[in-house]
Image (cartoon, rainbow, N blue to C red; front, side):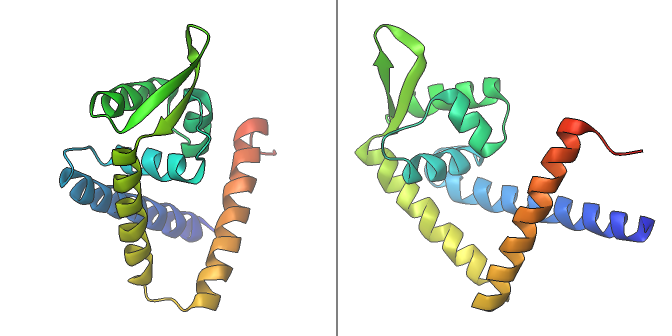
Length: 148
């Protein structure tokens, strides 16, 4: 059983490291950091926008880190914040045309990366189904703790 844990943890860490490298390499071309890729991809799917809290939860990132990235993307005119009254806290973050253009680039490059993993369409569907199950179950373990 320990071997499975080591294999799983090592594989997940390795995949994460590769994703971060690909994101960093691709975002550098636009003068951005790798972490911006995930935020742009999420905002691309939600044209009505997301709050910092929603974006943080969706990307499973620290709110402070998301807030810093949002500020950077706003400075680079990739996003705008649509405020509710004068409250930036609940502002909806929406992509600008320039942000949408880079988000489309991210989507295209991400699709290309997935095509290079060497799995067929059915295998990819099965993989994502298993991955979602693992992620959801581990989130529950994190909330409730490991059973004794």
